[in-house]
Image (cartoon, rainbow, N blue to C red; front, side, top):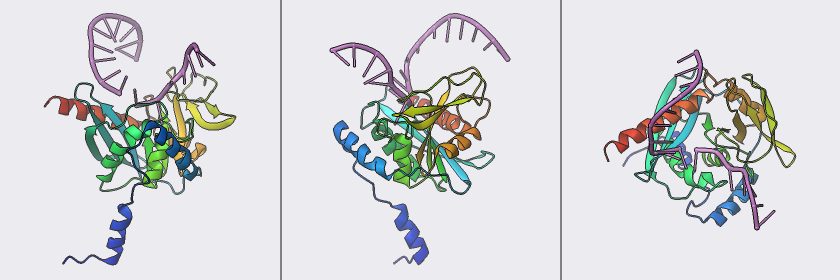
Length: 242
DNA sequence: GCGACAG
DNA sequence: ATCTTGTCGC
């Protein structure tokens, strides 16, 4: 019989955190779940400076019906890559605006579980609280993982805002029902801005600070660019053997 | 009723 | 998101 040190045994147990809820739900049930889970989201300053940051993205294959979820981790600061993990499967929920997490969170969580070293914060290619029910994919992932998360989307889901100046670094608040839920940031001069919003265990200021420090010469923050290209690379590779 | 609508 | 041809610019 294998013996396990008590401390290690405890770590194994806490790693097997049970799912917050079932993923086999109808769109109506998903909406109800979001309303309930949104109350558990904690908006607060990011605590200690991270040692590792992670980023997620998903690529889809039209012809094969498969999706390719990827999570990449990086040292902080410096952003030297550490690990890349993935999970390939079929989508089990349709794309419905406002319900993206029920389509993308399960495969992302599968990929995430393959990481040997977990990140201290996860950058998400989606909205956080800048969502009709304040529960975008970034919130859902952060809550499931019990980890700080930041939403960084390429386009708007909801809310209103003024257009930030064309200069890189310019920004405007994103409002929803009179409340600021995000930041519209010109991450690169002269191009369409990106939409930043807190996911979980993070706030507006911390979210923006993190994204700012992930910006290079491109519109998309470096960790998300990497996750995106890795997901596409994986898709092309697998499509080539089908 | 008519638009808007992360990926 | 994916598909898809050319085109504009560094």
